Amino acid sequence: MRVLLHGSELSAATAAAALAWVGHQVDWLLHESAPWSVLSNADWLRREPELMTYIEQALASGTLQIIETYEHLNPPDVVWLALSPDQRQSANALLETSMFQHHHGAVLINNSTFPVGETERLHALMGQQHSSVALPDTLEEGRAWTTFTRPSRWLLGCDDEVGEQVARELLRAFNRRNDVFQQMPRRAAELTKLSINGMLATRISYMNEIAGLADTLGVDVEHVRQGMGADSRIGYEYLYPGCGFGGPNFSRDLMRLADVQSASGRNSALLEQVMDINEQKKETLFRKLWTFFEGDLAGRTIAIWGAAFKPGTARIDHAPVLTLLEALWAQGVNINLHDPAATPALHAAVGDRDDLTTFTCDPYQACEGADALMLVTEWKSYWNPDWHRLASLLSAKLVLDGRNIYDPAFVASCGLRYRGIGRRADPTTH
Image (cartoon, rainbow, N blue to C red; front, side):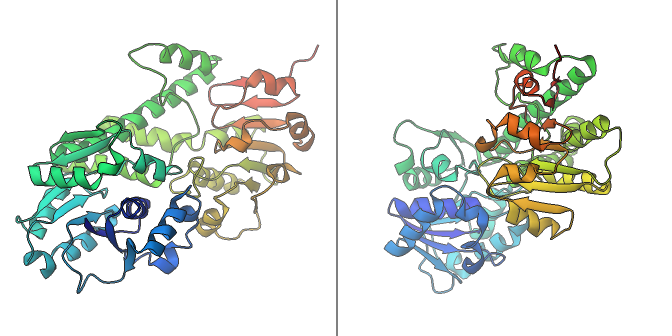
């Protein structure tokens, strides 16, 4: 099929590469905010496993071409939109062109994070002689290629047989093992995507609240988590307390769901609480540090491991580290930070500062001369450090584990003080 794909998001880049890989002819119209000269050098794109390789292969084979204008294009079979919420005007401009007024039978696939009902509105702009499908973006950053080409599910929102048939044919190469499409009306698919992330965020925030209560009561929250997860009605997924979640898609979906509720006249006190709890939890490690040093933080040096909002990505959109850094700097703390991928994005966000030193190769360099270590992003390279080396480097021998990935008793047995989210341990003397 001939596909006109519009957008510069991760979802756009992944769809462009994957659709061209399986033989579709893809014309990729980048958003004006990120032309190819910018996008091709974006750290987050180059670090996404496999993706850049497949883009370059598709460009070389000719099944993918990057275009700057849609004028003089042959009418496409499919228009695939993968835009951010603030780029709706670009979708409008594309779909209102004469190319669609004089052409019949194109299928619009809306893969953008737009408000509920937007696919219907865009369909009306394009013309009722065409069809439309809502296919909400369900990619996972850090494994976008895998989640697109070997999906566990797709939410397929369609209200006519033509749209469904074309969408299924377009993605047939990625739907062989079992039928991964969950078909429903367009609005239902759009709302389902937002609702899924709303539920996941609610579970995380609830578990973080329980962790705070466990701290107060002197209970190890890991016992509570294991007990809750063993209940078949609850399960273990997304029951891990931590120092807050971030990410462009997760955060945007929550705000979009809140907007949908507000626009419908049904303000959600629950969703507001979920977002408030998450923002508060981003300062959890700071509050633990403040308590440990009894407010005496000025002039201290703190090592931080991890800046990315999750392992496997170079992005820091809404990442907990941003809130944490502001709180530490307000108290005159110097920061040594290590992250294997996200330091360029961090410098772009906060600038070059005398009170921030970053490292990308050796995480122990960040601990030299530091009073304490904060674990913020659970990169696999952080899971099994040399604890005796850390004990020799950290003057206060304090480890603040924002993801509860360490064993408190083992850390304490190595002579370090451990503070997690609802967990703690101190060295014992015999």
